[in-house]
Image 1: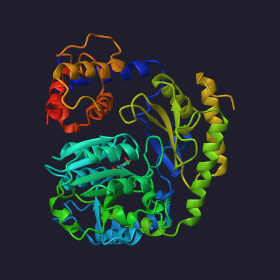
Image 2: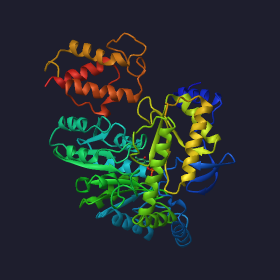
Image 3: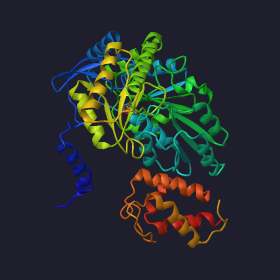
Length: 404
Length: 85
Ligand SMILES: Cc1ncc(COP(=O)(O)O)c(C=O)c1O
């Protein structure tokens, strides 16, 4: 029998073959208990979490929890409404104010997720006759924003300043163009050469720039705004998109900007308008977390220290990492193929380490990886344990390592 | 860049050359060779091929046009149209 789901038969068969080979399912993990930003119980076993994007460890911050509890009691479990109808509470205004203070911008607009922020911004800003020019390795939410809108979509080779410039040069000068960049690319953990890319983009007429700083917030740049701040290009970036689901430690998305007409987007951006707003407890947690991230120098230092520690240890052990130096708090361990990746992932979970397994199409063509995201709250002993268990997993699965 | 007004046959021949490295099953490239069904190219590979085609002829092929370009012949037609200014 064939029906609408028959198109997924190939994927179903591929997954089944993998599971039949005895590995556990990397996409069906359940955490029965979460003890801290870095520890949970998975399959009844204490597990070190090193694949959560919880960079700053804010999920269990006592002030954040207290703010959430207070808002839950005072404002209830949910808003049951759109931001433009009954879904804007005092807390939504407060979190937008916290974002304006954090980013030093005139405007901030909070969405229900970062995915929706990208979807809405890209689809709404660029309309028929306009162009979106995006990096080949852009996040799914950016590609989906392109698919949702009516603009012509142009893709340039990942992080290539020359390719970006060449492709912009082929477009009609009078047409409006939105160039979409990311500070940190989440699959390989490499950062964009934003100084050069922004300069190259702005050398062309009618270009506006949107930068997704999902993985840069909290620990890049003097104020923790992201890679674009560290690169000194704040004045030339028109829109910054971010998320509460990583460094902020809860859920939600946003866009900040200084554009004088920015506020009209609340009425025309469908993924903002046609969905319920975040629950009061979530926005209260986010506002408190964002304000604390403004003064988190010690945590940032620990995050970078932990990142260097893990990068150095895995390199020393003979693993091949996606970046020669730790460019961000994501360390991607390159794997030869799907089978080895799944076996390594399985061995790690047995040993009590959770990392992300990633494969195409989420990764660039042909790349399989085990991705670690580091937390400021990891202890040095936990990082040592992670390195040690990576070595044990490689030995157990015949994963080839380079001679140190 | 190639000849400024390359004819359709030359475009097709060059396209076949650009496709060759991706043609894992080494099937014969014809006008109606389908990228997804015959060459079994995934969407990422198709997008990389598009970038090479754009650079070869210095043209713009927006990703949103790709659903209409299913066969090698359709791409050759599109390139011919875009280079025939
Ligand atoms: C680069 C990038 N942008 C946007 C998002 C979406 O964020 P959210 O989890 O808030 O939907 C993510 C994370 O999934 C991401 O990695």
